[in-house]
Image (cartoon, rainbow, N blue to C red; front, side, top):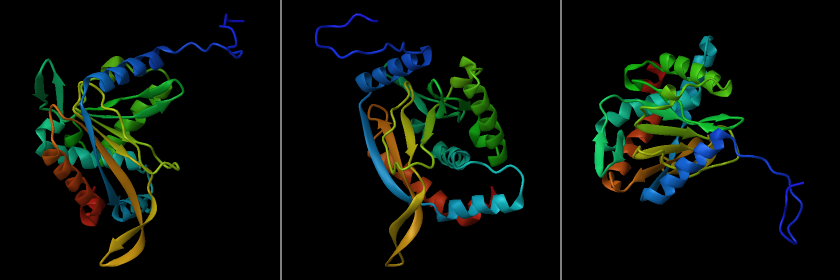
Length: 235
């Protein structure tokens, strides 16, 4: 029985895993050193869901919603160099390749694998990459080199009861996108309140590198991409 202070309830000790220790160190550094601000928008995802359903009907491997979000970010972020960047040593390093990290839940904690050159890859290629990376991560075989090099991260909570959340920037990156659950919610369309499939997008940004004047247009571009049925169907 572990020693305990007087009047302390009985307890069992569970040692933090190496991954949980690393998560604690990085998030602690992020909160301590990065002046973070948040912007949030409710995005209409009817076109996104329809495009993915069309893929299902065609058969074969169907990209996840997270794959779509990675593709959408990859197609947009090039207009915003400070969003695909590292802030360290009192410098903002504008990264040339568009490498995107994504949150992957494992039994030991959340890992951040990297999709390299995401802007140059098709949706199918991104889906192939993420499937392989998730398999490696959950099997405890994800090399450190596959968790490095990202300039931006997408954190998608998936089909849960959680509508929205604020993600924590992974240093030295300058921003991260949190994607809440896709659900039917009331939205105004053509002056009428109607039920629409939608998702809250929350962008966390480093105020040393970015202002709302850059972050807000980036979110606006993501919302427009999500509503572009023709573009989504062509992916």
